[in-house]
Length: 350
Image (cartoon, rainbow, N blue to C red; front, side):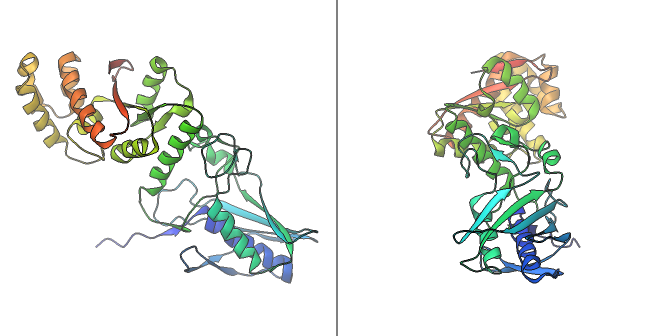
């Protein structure tokens, strides 16, 4: 019997916990083993504190992020907060430190030029510090992520316009295991950035290989290219909802067949059924009806395409059906299909 998947905490929740630990150390002069913070839902969460250092007018504390069973690039990262006393009017000033990025492109939740610490984490950090230093105290909170710049190289942050490190994120404080939320949030953010940068066309690719193939003929700014992975339905609906004028679906043949078969999620394991459906389409198309037996015997869609020597009628048959399905999901956008060949060439674009 499989054990239940374990939830974890966002970078925002970890930053708030580290900030509270640092505030307590600054106030009391004694390190605490754990802290409890309030999450946006009203629940409370307890965090074990890691590194703790006290100086004359500041204190530093860190939390090791536990993302639970979610495959998160920041799982195990050290989230660090330094709280320092300020003079002047009552305030909690939040800044970024080493490993936290800055926003360089419009369309994100934080303005250009600001540290990439999102609004809800800012609220959580402020509340955590205020529970220790109530008004009218004035303090600065600097949030850092150990090795954050290196970890950021494994994300899409640079394309989104977050440079120099990672973002401090989270709307609930909790990371749900193996959920698609992190990916779909990134899709939404990427589309927002594309629109804010003036792009009227968004290229949705299922993977980096397809994206690279699409970049040369389309000659669009990098912000226009959005990696959607398997989230076809979500990405198309998001483009339509946000008013994207033109959407280009960039993918290879196997994914294109899945879209043509009506799958909003292309990770679904129904390859055999998809090939049988494709075979029935081939049978009804006189130009390629001779490929029916190959379609029924093929192990993969890629095998059929290669066995057909990239037959243009076969490609068009699938592309037209895929485009028709995509247009149902994105009725407010004009949808085109770009088929990336397995040899790195564009096989179809219309």
